[in-house]
Amino acid sequence: MCSVGAALLCAGCVVANPDWLPLEESTTRSETDATSLETSATGNVGSTGTSSTGGGSLSATASGSSVDPSDSTTLTPEDLESPDPECLGPSFPVVVTPPDLMFVVDKSYSMFELTWDGEEGEETRWAGVWSGLEELMINLEFEALTGLVLSPQLKPQPNTWGVCTVDMNAPEVELTSNPYMPVMAAIPPKKPDVVLEYAAAGNPLAPAIARAREHLTIQPAVNWSQFIIVITDGAPNCSPADMEQDPHVGLTTADDDVVNIVQIARVEDDIFTVVIGVDIVPELPELLPDWEPSSDPIPLLTEIAEAGGLTGPDDIGFRNAEDYDELKQALTAVERFADCLFPVPEGLLDALGVDSFDDVMLDVAGGEYLRVDDCVEEDGFVIIDGFKHDFIGLCNAACDDGFQEPDAVTAVACEP
Image 1 (spheres, rainbow, N blue to C red):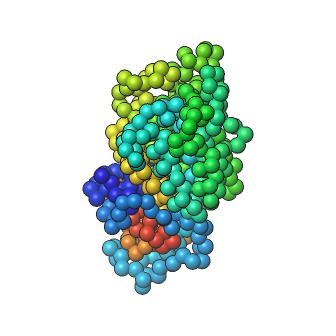
Image 2: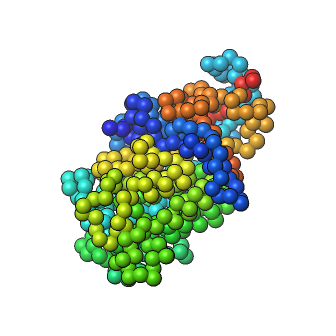
Image 3: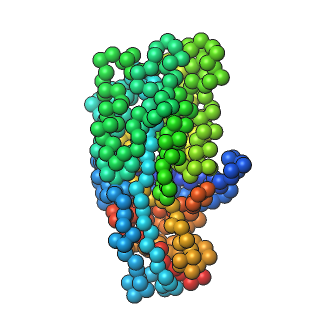
């Protein structure tokens, strides 16, 4: 079982259990070819280290209010005790700015109908999602800018294609540094008296993710990380191609257009998408409601996760929470995003006087880390290709250190 304080999204484990991995073929941006891929770093962005922070929720300061560059510590050669005596060159403070987090939450009927091992024993999946979001939104107050899109909208129209409606004019919650009150007011109650008032057969993730992406892209002068976090208990449906059919027939077809939408967000907008599954089984369940896609959801959700640029620690490619405790771990560790994956400062290599990140050491709260090729088991950092800018991913112990002291990251030049 993972310990909440030690990873990016799989609140990490004391054993080497990779968390969220940049794809082996990391996306390289192309305005003309959104599917072009170029090999980049491989390994987990986050920590599987042995942080002493125990289970339970974290109120991270890492994704906190904006950092003043003047407050950052610039190390001089005399200050360094480098593992490599040649890493004594110029230094440059790395300012980690809080990220944008847009949550896309599936509230299809199965969330309210199917049960699992929840916070209070056997309860609905939705009850677990509600509890997990409540705690996370408290912890994200002033720690990040957070928003919400529901899939489908709050009160859909049953027995019509209205079950697939997403409000394309505005998200349910626009990005805010105070997400608790607006998010909890926007989602259905934990245990609604009338389920059909909120639940619907549709899970229109494609337009919901498109809406989240649109809201992220209108933010001015973004020089920080942006994420879409998808929470779902099954495959998306509501494909426009099926809407000529009766809803009860058309809803049984999975909508694979989601993959393209997520990939465009990654390769054109530098937006990472993370998929968190809610008790999704590898095979088609016998009790699959007859209005849901009649196919195994695992392959499609894996494609979505891979298109988003970060995959989960499991063979299926995304983080699949099989009970409330695992969901809570995944949600709580979202707080670590800002500390472990952030843009490379503009002009960093020139300021250090080096040509490559192979000649850079990162001092993270006193821990000294070099670039690694594969950080599944190594401590260090990787570089992930981007369109507007590349990203630094802190791995394992480096992420642990960054989470504890996010304002203490300094890049130091090493001799070639």
